[in-house]
Image (cartoon, rainbow, N blue to C red; front, side):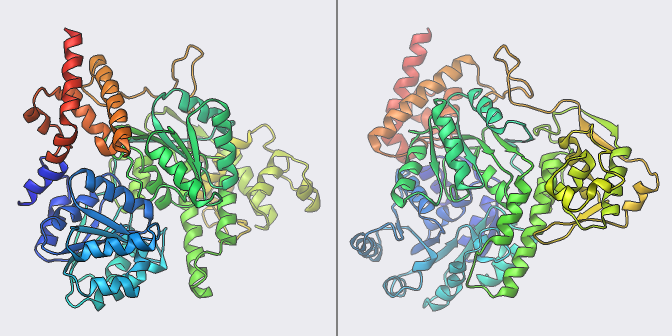
Length: 617
């Protein structure tokens, strides 16, 4: 079979997505490749299709057990023989899998990087034809990446030990220029074909809210999306427990995931979410890497993450099937301070020397600053994200909270001048909280300790809300009128530009006339942006059929003991609803239905569609 026949026979697709074909051609021609493609763009097909055409075995190096299990299960559902080798296997299971691999039963083997240079695995690898090594989540090889894993540095050592060098493919969803260079260097890619398809995910809606009651806003958001699967990310284990407990008490189908749970409970909770037994997952950032659950319709960040790479990776777990999904960030005043504390107190990567750890900490502070700016910008949120990764758009996407809000230009000269004047009189000795408390005329212990009630700007902004003061403060930072020191104290300092406002120059800001919210108008109707349909072209009849097919998929998945989305994705069900196939030939025209799945599931879904249409006559 050629690559098009492989694509259709096993995966049920008629054509490749942007970027896939050039990477596949490169690998098949024996050339190393580096693919930078956003989550949901089909990176895995770029090495899975060539793997099914090579004569030898393809090793896929993955960082997490959940990622391996998920992809191997999906391949087996498609009729592809694949296996994984990691610590979740018993010694007996591991040896059996290696024996089957030596016998040539598998086209693809997923392996953790830690296993590569162990004697048992090397004994297998040195005596087997390995055609390709595919490195998934390749940014983990770079200490400048957000998920640096020292074990990834063993990959090039392993490849050098093989009797014949295989073709090497590296794949990642997020990589700055520095990270890309590290991937090429550390994996020793030889004149690689580099393909970056762009970071934009047009199907994702981005929104930033600063609600007074975070949990109330979250609860309203979920209530207005019944039956929709979602993930809630919290910064700490304590918050995960708190939010999960409240949602459970309020009757939601919810589970939780964080490093404080036992291994067994984490596995059970993850399976409940993957198998749709729990609709909502509340988790720290320990959850999600490699989770290929395609029907996640929303991701809410209960706190601001520490950097844009983490945010975009986590938010990108919504809408992997290409259908509309929502990514909401609930910003709170303490989020920046908490992240700063985690950066300064964090003891990650103890194997690195102190100089390198300090460099990484300095990098993390700068990333946190840019993440904070994202929460306060009034420009297009999608454009802000793309600019961060070195791409540029139109500055209006029409699918983010800023583009869909009405703004007005407000003269904030008096407030900004008072803020800058207070910083100047304080001599740059204090942080933001002390400065804002001084302006509002607060009587805190620090105000009395530092005698700031004697500051000439004390109480000058007492009628301005804390929220508005923070907005002005952040705008001054973003536009370079203020700066903060790069240490744990974050002292506020003036800049060369400060004098422009202090000497009388007007200072204007864009302010939202009405903050976008996810509440109701009292009649059960959602305020803010209009809720999108599941997909354009689906009417009421198709929506009803979709729910019936989804119920059939759930029953089928229980029988097969696999996650529902591995039977058929939401996108495939939607395509069935639009095409309404009547024959096996019709069913093969549905995107995502290959020969193997047609044989396993085709007739029961055809029968459901026929029955639905018969009832409607």
